[in-house]
Length: 215
Image (tube, rainbow, N blue to C red; front, side, top):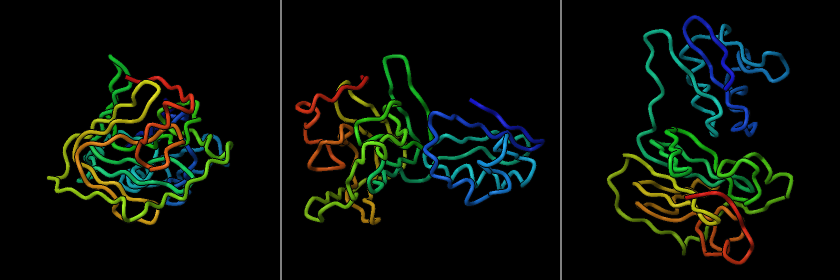
């Protein structure tokens, strides 16, 4: 984890989680500029401005620590999963990733691989671009499933061994068009890239030799 410190805020950067979505630079180029070294200079904006730009990072590669009276990042009110066309799943909320028997990661933002080829599973590492993974992220309305939920609370994300990603807790899924396609409290999402029912698992990982660590 790389850290860039100013008097009122420290920016933390986990390079392996970065997928170059560039949300930070688009919002605050005087702080986040990949053409410079170091590429992060937190002395060039207020702590509030930097915090807002960091929270726009969809992968969770960026985080911050406040040294002033400002508050730490809070999870969004509703847990959300968003499909990205030809790309990963963006998940936001009060997240708990179960990566093994003794590895549990508390997060607010992650980008999960859905092409099946990432070298940093379960996270996206942009390999979908190298393998020309294609899926427009649009779901047939006939497959929408909307159930009543309370909303909020913990969202537990468990990648299974050589299989799908189990998600438990109140959440909603939107496709790449922004349409709400699922609202509920438990489902399994494809991460092998082969499902004919994306983003949901249809068991294709059992027949396409998909391998990945999981619980």
